[in-house]
Length: 200
Image (cartoon, rainbow, N blue to C red; front, side):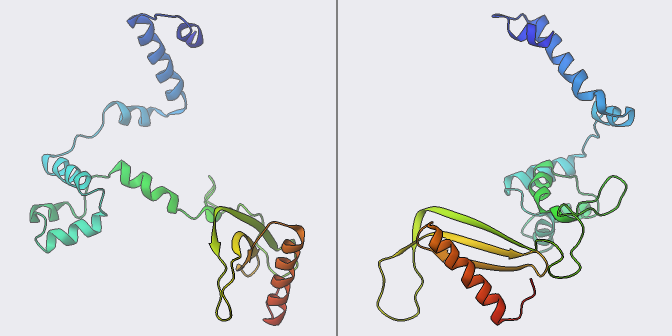
């Protein structure tokens, strides 16, 4: 029914309302009764909390800990110190911090820690413990040099080797993406690992 109403050229206000109600019903079908009640009746903020939220937005979502330090130092009104243990949550700040959760150690629904890479590696060589990836830049960079005549070669590509057992990372800079250069990067990684007794 929603698709049929959306394809009409000039839907009326009643039809648009029907679409909105249908969308809400579909979105709310997986919510529990408690969650629906909390959405229908949101908690109203106190005037001080509203002022705090507005100040947080004007300060470009400065962390709350920094804002409270500014309150104690009298750069912001000291009346906000009352909210130190009960500040209203800022949705934008919560969304901004959401990516900081370690993705390898997300808890599953039963509370156990699950690893996206599978079972933990207990010894070197247990499975494929080295990963490689190549990054290519549209804007090249100069080849780093410590001594000698400057070269006119440019770095276009980097091959990154990661050892999943020891989490050792090795980056090899490359001037092109030819197979010979990639093999040279692989040999330089193997030589580097062998001379430093890093287990793979």
